Length: 312
Image (cartoon, rainbow, N blue to C red; front, side, top):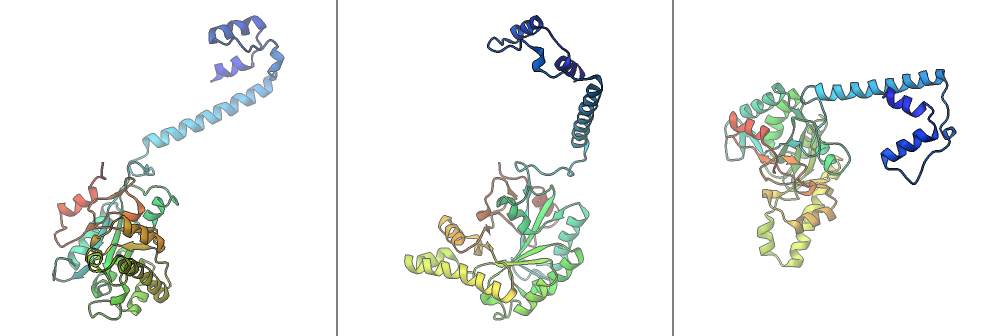
């Protein structure tokens, strides 16, 4: 670098410049008057050398920090991140059905995440990456979601979430709330919201099977039905809970391009499936995958979910 500086600041005669031009293959333009370059005094030259050295050392230090920093301390590249999104439904002391995870097993999941350096992130942060509002998630990121609004969320899950202080997104279908005996009440959802750990989002208005409804209804009726399911759910959640409901979980994991288009028209910026692979740069915001958690997700089965690689 110093040699380059001397080369630029030391005066040269026209013949030297001409020889240099010939070696570099420059024939169209030649400097025939060295006064074109300003002369630099000895004092200014020393100052300039110091500044060049300082910049060089700064660059070298930054490169060394990047190369030798421990794994996981560098931000993830958009091309290689993967975030498992875990999907739960119900909790209890015993697996009452195929969608129930025992409270003991769920707690073991939270403990494993806490003890092994995983970062449980709000689902909205992941969505913001796909919307271009933030960078890729950091390594070992995980998101937790729960569908439906079952009473066991309030009874069994919330105390554990508060203990571990992990963010969770609940996808609710409002028709059941304060109506069905298996569901939470609006008062309980407001109480959950006050913890600051839960984001409350849409699961349509009454959890329909869109495949069945499309066969049962005329095209005009189906179009109206879908719009009602999307819009009425958002309106009810926002009115009762004072939240911004702009994410949607597909009932039964059923969706297609037509439904995605209608969801976008209804104001949703992201939707979630039950496709079993981690979210990565290969996915799109309107069809993000999730792992359905059952009572079989224990031991190696659970750790495999967390270490699973994105589609490639």
